[in-house]
Amino acid sequence: MLRIASKLFALSLLALVNTAQALTIFTCEPEWAALSEELAPGAKVFSATHVYQDPHYIEARPSLISKLAKADLVICSGAGLESGWLPALQKRAANRKVIDGADGMLYLSQYIKTIDQHETEFFSTKHVHPEGNPHFHLDPDRVLKLALVISQRLQRIDSDSQQLYQQAFEQWQKHWQKSMEQWQQQAMTLIGQPVVVQHTSFSYLIKWAGMDAIADLEPEPGVPPTMAHAQSLIDDARQEQPVAIITNWYQNDRAARWMSDKTGVKHLNLPATVDLKGDINNLQRLFDYLLIQLQEVQ
Ligand SMILES: [Zn+2]
Image (cartoon, rainbow, N blue to C red; front, top):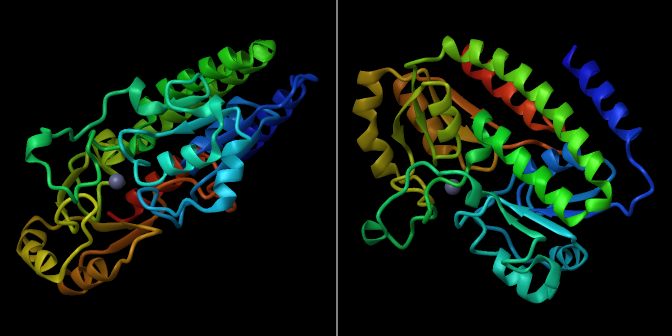
């Protein structure tokens, strides 16, 4: 049903695409590419990373530089998520349209509040979330706000197609709000459920669903799990009986499998973002999938 609805949605938007020059959009993460495709019908959209990559660490490859050089708009999570590679790409691409401060460079973190912010002075240098947790695409409420931010930016930089973007946003919003009602119902069954995580990739969803992350296999964000740290969590895991140990598709899940063997708690390996080349290729489908997986594990 949802698939038919989204197909009709895409078709009706295609009808709106006029002869205006299509924008070239470069996104740092695949979730923003998927969202851009829905909010900017007809645009050429490219994502620098995919679901099997850790967005904190990628190589500034020449192919990415040439993509960035052609971009009219760049959309990234920000909050330090891309600080290890995006500045190098921007420098080498030398595209004035997408330098920091230009209308063509959109850091979404500037428009929402991140969770898990810490005082800088208490910070370890290894910590990869200097401005709070940047994985906010897993909060349906924040996505709703950010879709409007993206649409407004599209309308600003490509005012000839303003009506197209506005209508695309309105249709997307209607669909999203309807899905949110369904997700909220599903989340009711998850309230209070404890889980063990590896990195804070799913923190926004866990919080949104009212679940409880009782332990993190990473000693601190960005520091890979060690056996000593995993060992120290075993007693808690046995006592609090989490429903799952959650890892994501790009991670080494050795520590999670080890803990699962030791405690009998189920290991759940989930996509932390959309898979542009697979079935879970937009944020709606990602939330549908994640919530079903979390419900089934109980
Ligand atoms: Zn992170």
